[in-house]
Image (cartoon, rainbow, N blue to C red; front, side, top):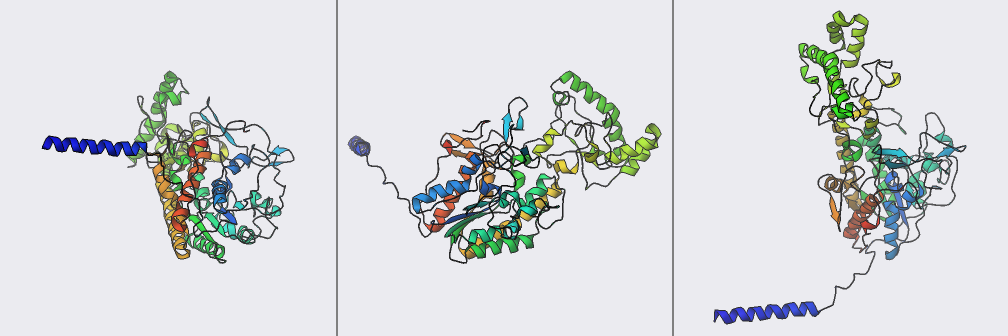
Length: 521
């Protein structure tokens, strides 16, 4: 009996399998519908991400691959209208003036396989900084814009671009409707039915990329962290205004920018015999022995006598050692060190050493070395960047090795904490505003966490936050690659579909490259 039951069961399974194999019916394709959203007039507000900035510059191809432009293409299948962008004139990047590239707005990066680092492409941008466009533009992403800049009248005034200090932004000056308007005013003049708002990264980015050094207290263009109260006022004004005529929209929270490749690529401990000797390990080992005997050893002994011996250890002859840096939060032992070194170095030289190493320590895993600092390591400090007013002589002429990297080169834990606290506060404001107005909310912080802890898989690919090879970020280490912008568009689509019941489709990330070539067709 049991044997018969087994055979009956086997026959039934075969019948089911055959029925499944014979059926060529596939699930019906879900039609693209807008749900309760209206995409007829889509306007995008934001900063460099909305604009399509990539590889350290704004250029035409990057703009066409902006997540905002990708979104507009997906909206088209659900009733979306035309989406206009203030395109740069070519793919060189940056601005020119009088036929000369402006150093503050250089050309875009490409990867140099020889130096294994980004380099600016040759050429001069065809986009003059004084040129202006006419018409209205749906893509109102403005590189460099902070939250409150979107409200500022005159932010697109060309005269303000050349003022000292500058009071306007050249990217907005290209397409602002008048010298006195604001980004928000030009957006509202288009009567949007749907908007996207991704803003706030620049409210901490300038401070972070300058190593936590406030460069200005200017309320418009300073690089300090935007106060929470200022962000709160600006953000709620933006959302309240954009929704005042019934428009729906999507907003995004902010990742911790300190998780971007710009802050995570250069290790805190890159010093080896090979790196110090510039690929010549024998010379590098000899240099390490000399530095330990003449600098690190005496400095370690002096600091130990002052109860601060944990600041400095000898360079390792067999493994990687940390960078030498200045930590402005440490008690300054300049006077005490000068006193200890005076008998052997003389009063004047001892005072010089004290000034240099009074707050010196070796970097730790909790410090973040900026991507731009890579080019400074081992280089001779100039007078205006040494912190002591003169270009230090040999042997104190190698940043990070025999001369401390300065505050602008590194983010220390207290600075990282400042950025995190501000970002958390901004995200609370964003989430509260989105909830109050019934807007779709994109969790970019969660996506960034996935990219930096294993990656995001799609098809046969995995995207990570690894610099240059991870696929998500461009060569400036801050802005997305073409594929990264495609990912942003997809997570925006997910949030919109979930909130409004639309059925917008993803884009195929495999069709987007991870880097732009030297020559863009």
